[in-house]
Image (cartoon, rainbow, N blue to C red):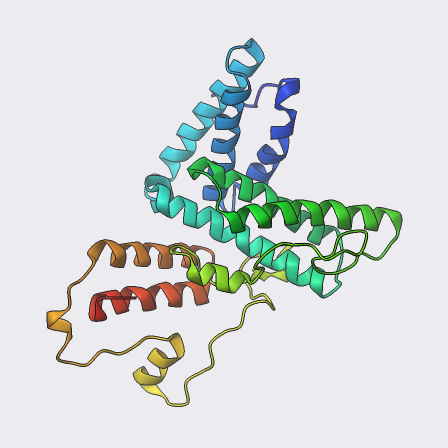
Length: 282
């Protein structure tokens, strides 16, 4: 593979932002980086696959993706599109949750602009797996607007209006912005925030996420109650019809949450897996 990517054709310039995002995440979040490049490859082929300049870029990307795929051969997010979509969506929503929390608290700076913008790019990257659902489309549009609006205000020395309000003071119709609720209701959505000190990278907690109350007792029963795990009666497990595919899916999503140091997401998926195995339902 060539040491550096060939110059992008003029009609590929809009893809440059996705390549930059891929590069920024390459070391810490290689799966996110991989699918950013996959998006560039797929979109580039739709724009132009015949000109010599385009062919050079596309061939480079194909080789680069093959190298990355080989290096991450053991990653479930490389072998399974379902897990991959969960991986990227989870990360994008956490970036969004962080930016939204900072915006509503009127803590506006370049990191918030970048978090909103990167979230909008990663929501678009999710089209690699198919059409976006209505909520994700709204989040993408809102994140793109907010990044541009806050950036404009900062450059002009103005204080941005926090929350879902446009630059003329009108309330914006953005639907449900409860990230924790959205992620909890998605088959592959965890509930967590992001580390404010990291400029929007996963690892901490967001003010938009409310952790479950701690159990009043100690030991295993308290831990199970704190995690929301519903303990079955002792004589029912042997008769339970187990949905092995669903149990496997939830354990994979738990592993994905652990990759992002997302304790709450991991606990939620493990709870679901345990309930499927012992109760026959989530």
